[in-house]
Each structure stands twice: as structure tokens, then as C-alpha cells.
Image 1 (spheres, rainbow, N blue to C red):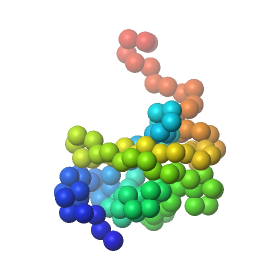
Image 2: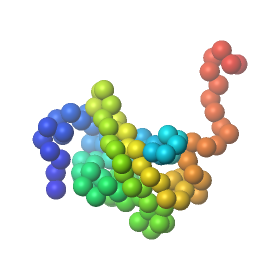
Image 3: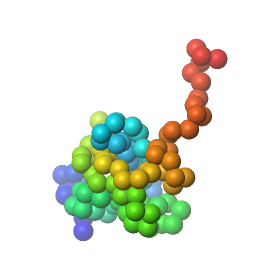
Length: 117
């Protein structure tokens, strides 16, 4: 399985051959998570409409929800202007974060901007 050549040519991968993937909930526009994709994960996501990513720690593909049941049905995939990030709009079933929360970005922790200090 491989990406269409025209799509592949638009992508800029990091030194490990990966592309950043930002995942947003379709209904709410909440940012759910950030993960990495290689070409195979992106191709599988496009063909199966299930969020599929590349685990850097395990060095293997993983389908979101395969073991937890917290699946992502992908509605849309966009490429950013630089071609180094994709945006996935998904219907999320259950928590998106591995900690069991709805979003990996729903903590009270935030960085202060210079003018807020």
C-alpha cells in the first residue's frame, strides 16, 4: 500500500519520515490529540476512515481504539500550507487521551504569554 504520488509529493516529513497529525473533534472543534503518521498510517486512515498512527516508542502502527474501543471515525483530512502537518476532523467515541480524558489538551496547565506574566 502506498500514497498516491501527487499526495506524497505534497508532504514534508521529518528526519524519521513522519508527519505531525493534529486531531480535532468534528462536532465541537475541540483539539483532542497530536500524534505522528508515516505514509502507511496516512494511507490506512484515508482508506479505512479510522484514525491510524505511528507509535514512535513501539515503532509500529496503531489504530486508535483498537484495544480501548475509543475509536475515531475520520470525516476529513487536510494538509497544512507547509505540507508538514495534517489535520484530522473526527467523530470520537470515548476519551481520546491515553490518560482517559476527553482531550489530551484539557488540563488546567497552560503556558503564560509574555504580557500575562
